[in-house]
Image 1 (tube, one colour):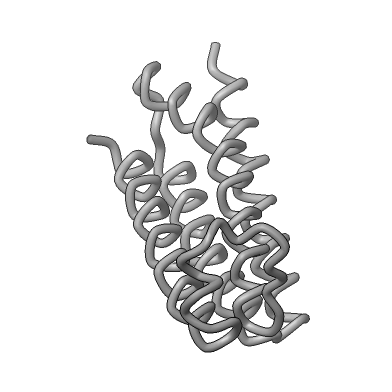
Image 2 (image 1 turned 180 degrees about the vertical axis):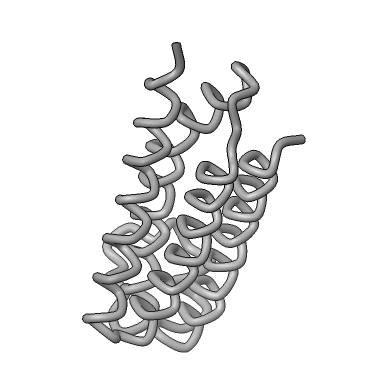
Length: 130
């Protein structure tokens, strides 16, 4: 398994962990009965709502990064720079999730921008292959 794929798997685990935390905070936010219901009409607020939005953003980021990683892996063109880019992506997304959950706006934005730049670099690397 390439380093890039390894970090994508770690990122998947980060999304799972974030989902677990979001579910646990939803118990304090709306109580046990709405959590076990269909959740129609349930509006999460505070950390629970922010984590819900962070999870959606994480899934979108996953959908954006996977094609570039697959292209790099299938063509066996990983490099030290692509390894660094996926590492920056992972740690930036971790910062993003924590900062979003705790409502640290500037840090959240920095994590989001760093992860987006990493994604763009990985696409550039994958598409620059001759």
